[in-house]
Image 1 (cartoon, rainbow, N blue to C red):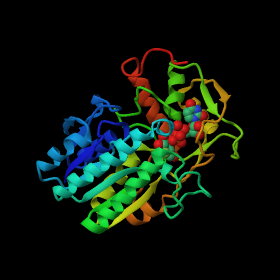
Image 2: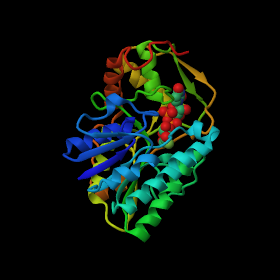
Image 3: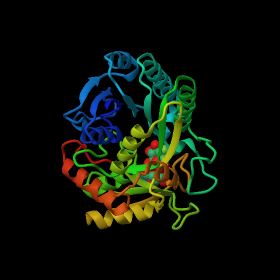
Image 4: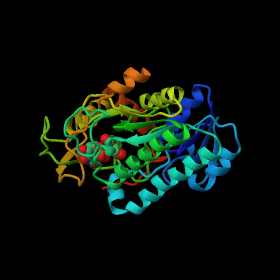
Length: 329
Ligand code: UFG
């Protein structure tokens, strides 16, 4: 297939773009490098640098595209609370522009990168796709609003679409891993301690109602996640919008993640308990039964040890190159 990948220089987008290229697809990437990395763009892909909203009409207007995988978005919960306008603009408005460009150019096969944040604080775990969607921040709300748009485009205009709701994506695929200017995610931050770029990891709360008092999350390997996009693209049916959760079905506490990182890196990784982070739920665990049964998704790397080992192989080879050599307090 000839595919457009928006946000294909970002962490998840670039692993997915590499996976699509390896599977023999012709990939064009749009990225403005606001958070993405040039080194992460697969050499075989065509790169168009710019904002999706500005360039997507011209790109799809070249013709011949069979589908779109849409990653480009703002994706930080805390930032979305402080700057909601950015999230409505860059997530919702930009996606509407993308959908209109698809409609104008008869491209109707879409895979959308969504999030567990659409569910908000779950009433029970594991979370299935039929549970209530009550996002607790503008990030989750913006992704949910896009789902409503996509559903209506499937019904009215015959789009065949899939939204994939990711839980906690981690790990690396070869040369591609988590490499952000400002890092907020648990595993890369712990590995920065092991690298000597930070003194310690702060545990945001140890008084949650969980196995050891620290928050529990469902970690999914980024390469297993990429496989799901490929399956969805091939399975999309005109007129239908399907929604699938993507996680491992296992929950690990912050303390368990730190312990696994100690085992993998051999570093003592000092930890200190700090106050809870605003907006964090205690436990998020996915049920991925639906995508396994309907699309035959079969994750092979989604155990925490493999995820951390792959992330560490990537982070430790980054050395001084990309992670700032400055120490972060
Ligand atoms: N945490 C710490 N210390 C840190 C960083 C994180 O204790 O320095 C804790 C957090 O409080 C949380 C857990 O580790 O309990 C995981 O935090 P992350 O920031 O790695 O991930 P989140 O669960 O907050 O969010 C991620 C994505 C969201 C997505 C969500 C869905 O960033 O986009 O997973 O599960 F919505």
